[in-house]
Length: 302
Image 1 (tube, one colour):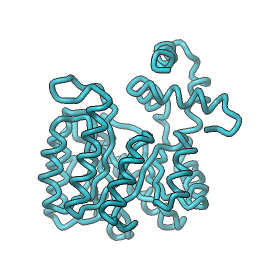
Image 2: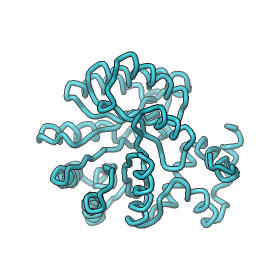
Image 3: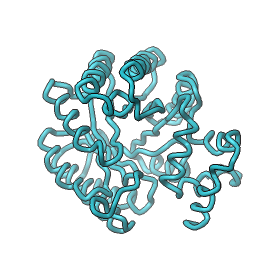
């Protein structure tokens, strides 16, 4: 399957955009904010929480970053008005990190402040390793300003992640743990699947044992089962953790986690940058191509 997935991805540049759109329909809500609202309302009706994710990153003009900030604030207002069970994720490169770190900080501070006023939460996504230090620094600055309604993402394939988490648990940080999808060198990132899995479990255990909240973001059944073990062993209350998955990916596993009595949050991306996002995600994680192809030809979509 791995070879087939890579073959599918290698052919993407010659695939018509409309066909890529067919591939993407399952895991991107659409182009508009109302598309995201519609999808999240349906998920909420199935007892699933959501995270709204506006596509677009690596912005290099302050005016564009300001526009993103306004759009993200509008998302919180819409969530409140629509009575949705959803928070919002942000990428610092869409808020000016590549331009000026202080500009980025002020943009994200405004968003987190508005979210706090509306009783909501901001998840700061982690991007490639060139942004890791700055992302953690900005997160710490927000916490120093007294913001509790903000969380961070740590990637299990980075060798530094254990040290990062041991530092952040002292702040009682709210974590999202994922494997990581960016292509990184073996100097800084584990390349072997078993090493990544082992580190993922270690990180989740460290977070739980230090009394912090953890979002367990995985589509890997092995990691789901290992997380179940940690939850049971630590008698972890449902209010201290959640599972997280991408829209349209491994829905049968998603439904099983929910039926097993755990809370689950679905990441719901939308926006005009859907094509660039789709191409990047498929190239960075060929396994998703396999999931999508299976979904396209499976009668029940799983």
